[in-house]
Amino acid sequence: MLGVSRLINGTVRPEDALRYGRQSGRGPAHLLHYSGDKKPVIVWNITRRCNLSCMHCYSDSHDRDYPGELTTDEGRRLLDDLASFGAPTVIFSGGEPLMRPDLFELAEYAREAGLRCVLSTNGTFITQDVARRIKDAAFSYVGISLDGIGEAHDNVRGRKGAYDEALAGLRNCRDAGTRVGLRYTIHRKNVDQLSAIFDLLEEEDIPRCCVYHLAYAGRGDKMRAYDLEPQETRAALDHIFKRARDFHARGLEKEILTVDNHADGVYLYMTLREEDPDRAEEVHQLLSWNGGNQSGIAIASIDPQGNVHPDQFSWNYSLGNVLERPFSHIWTDTSDPRMALLKDRKAALKGRCHSCRYLDICNGNLRIRAERYFGDFMAPDPACYLTDEEIGLAPDAAKTPEAAQWLVPVQQNGTANP
View 1 (cartoon, rainbow, N blue to C red):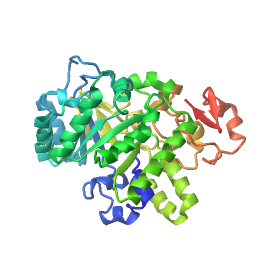
View 2: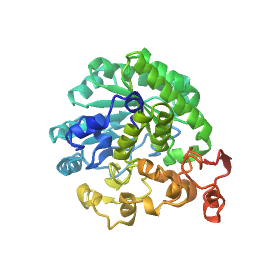
View 3: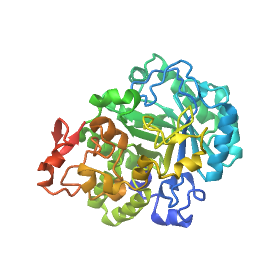
View 4: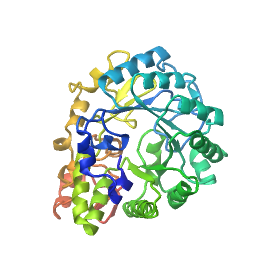
């Protein structure tokens, strides 16, 4: 997760993180990315059931019962373990978490245990009454998915009227006094909505927006053909940077983030290096502390059945189950070969990722995209949009047989294009 607006506008500095000793349990939420202890944020998918059929859904959810989901008591024991382990935040996700009857009971239990609670939802169930319950449960933040305006959102979400319901839910949360923001996954089917999404932030007084890149997981794996090409991605990032600066210049403090393509941090750094070299070096320090991709390090996923995964997109690989071993034991056990790689992956990465001069601030990008595309967990991420020249790859290196095996069908400016 890249805090674009704070980094590009200079509203976060290295001394801010140092003031709290870079400890995940001490500082405010926006400094969590720069912690030194890297306690994991937990995405707990408390149910797989969902009332929508989103075309990029990583959990491939449907509106039906799924057997074996953790019970309320099992959930309480999990939350006790997470709190004692020092996990700073639990994100209640799904499926659609508001379809689980004990959501508020579990959230209140988590809050009493000292965990910061976040709700990730499609927003369609948030009536005024539900918004009051969200407020009473002390969710510190609610992220509502919007993939465009009106019909564009409905097309992605698979149901007419989903946009109006989600927007009403967002307004209800805002009016109830809960901090709320948008979650927008960008691809070719909705990239034309990017500017309108930023307009909506201003029109509706929404303080936060997370722009997600497409992850090749669940139904999202079938969306690969609609992922942005490198130049399209760069154009989208340029627009995001422009809008973040414009909001700041006009005194509108909107928190803009991008998620799931860690080349964004490099691209932001390169942009600043051309414009303000001193500020660029401060940003480089923060990006180094951020560490790039944190799958298996500072982000964890627990699926509805209690299986632990390196991140919410990697349900194809289980590190263990919380019904058999506590999460705290699973997360620190590097006898699992994949966990060992994730904790210290740089030497094992292949292709462009292995040779990239920015590996310290990207950390190999999103592994599930590499695995889904190439069938190799250590392969380069095909969604990297940086050129060979930009990442410091020698001109002849891209012509070797070893490098050639990681090429994908379309090439643009020397960059692999999914």
